[in-house]
Image (tube, rainbow, N blue to C red; front, side, top):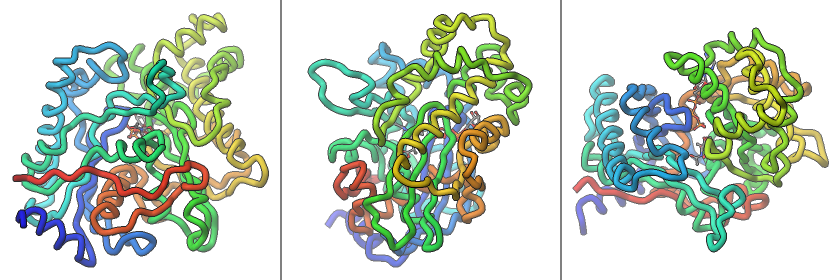
Amino acid sequence: MNAHLARLCHLAAQPSRRIIGLMSGTSLDGLDVALCRLSGHGPGTRLELEQFRTVPYDEDTKARIRQVFAREQVSLEYLTLLNPWLGQLHARAVLDCLQEWHISPADVDLIASHGQTIYHAPRHQHQRPGFALNATLQLGDGDHVAVGTGIITLSDFRQKHIAAGGEGAPLAAYGDFLLLSSPDEERLLLNLGGIANFTYLPRSGGDASTAFSTDTGPGNTLLDATVRAHFPELAYDEDGRLSLAGRVHEGLLAALLDHPFFAAPLPKTTGPELFSAAYLTEAQRRSNTETLTLEDTLATLAELSAVGVARAVQAAFAERPAPTAVYASGGGAHNPALMAALQRHLPAARFASTDALGVSGDAKEAILFAVLANEAVAGQPVAIGAGRQRVPAVGMGKVSFPG
Ligand SMILES: Nc1ncnc2c1ncn2[C@@H]1O[C@H](COP(=O)(O)OP(=O)(O)OP(=O)(O)O)[C@@H](O)[C@H]1O
Ligand SMILES: CC(=O)N[C@H]1[C@@H]2OC[C@@H](O2)[C@@H](O)[C@@H]1O[C@H](C)C(=O)O
């Protein structure tokens, strides 16, 4: 038997595995690296987060990704080059982290690499005739990560979800259900990344098929892009200072909300392909708000993100009260303007951070991919969300051997 395959079979039979989860999201701030010890699988999964670091993307890396990121027309040669380039970059980032943590690559069992989403094209968004399918593309080739680190790597997790009938996202429900459901309360887990999404978790022991996650619209992406357009040296509106100094403009808000995405049935996914500078400019034109101050524009965009979340929660719980226990994660959870707007639109919610549940909000998405890899090698596919999302139980991720 191939020695790597034998090692993989051996790992699968162990009571626990040491897995590095890698995630780099739509904000392009960097690569999240989560070193996880995962014991068991399925509902018996236990997590110990041994180390976590975000390796920031330098300006050159951000510029390279932006050449193709969420763009309909790109150079095919550039895209082809970027795929292995990002794989090599991610491999080096893993090696740098391991060196810093004084851990040998030989002491890591698996890497679970999400890659960099370049384009997300659910059917409701692309509407191309002749393509009655959902699609998504992540770059950062898994073979390059495996060969570059010497560690067996699982990658490209979203394709199986699409092949089985999903939109390839959000996958959060799988990790959230296995790690964060509770016998005492039903929960909403709210992730405020570039795009916002939430997971509904029934009480643990309840029906896994009723758990589901959905995107709700923009999280930080429009806020970040607007700040960057005014202050190219700033990555975001730190602590929501500019947004908090502004006032919501109802006309602009109404124009922004006048998009079919907000009324589309759940679950749904989206990305910066839709929630782009062009979308904002068009709404500003329709509402005659091109000259609105930066502060008022940001206050309105924070409000938009909050209303998107609130509308999706109301749509999911039209028949009964929504869970009041809401645990926030992602960079937007550090933005007081966004959190204040959310509290106004979801007055019954009791907000806390997922940190209060023992899972770092900043690391949660990278941990998710480690959990998915753990399931792929050691678990049985779980029918999470099968009720609402109608995706049958599937294991996700493609295996790359280092040699
Ligand atoms: N102190 C802060 N004040 C305001 N905003 C913040 C703060 N810290 C982080 N953010 C926001 O969080 C963003 C990064 O969030 P995060 O890392 O969760 O995004 P992501 O993982 O790239 O997104 P996605 O989940 O969509 O893939 C920043 O770009 C910024 O908008
Ligand atoms: C296609 C894609 O990369 N989607 C991301 C993005 O970032 C947040 C939101 O949009 C979510 O749908 C997803 O990531 C998380 C990890 C998910 O799949 O749950």
